[in-house]
Image (cartoon, rainbow, N blue to C red; front, side):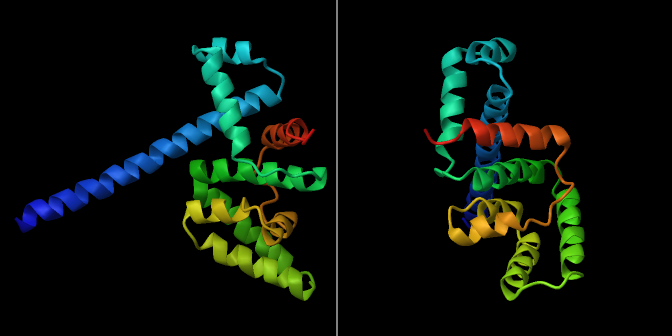
Length: 177
């Protein structure tokens, strides 16, 4: 009886881990589709390239957009989108992104800072010790503190030029109308 109970618990944990991976993969696909759309491909072109229907592509674009808060100021939308890209990169290679973040924090600490800037740096240090989903969630929160945190990000150099351009195009395309 105890063995079966443990087996059921273990399988439940495995099932949840796989569910989380599937959700992450679906979210990453939606972001990739939104990126293709942001760089100028039409819904139909994306559907053709992916071998799926236009309805699937439209649903993916809607889902990716729905996850975002409404940000009216361009100077806040761009850092948000850069951190969306950074979150995706964390899932690909969290060790490299964390290393870049720690190096950035070390550089920031060498420069005299205000008390609030030191608070942001300390928060980034705490986040870099957390699991990937915690980092991603914190840097994409729709709060005034998270908005300020994104303005002083330690991840300079973590994104390629192409990734930065895509983020900026997404930010432009997501401007509230």
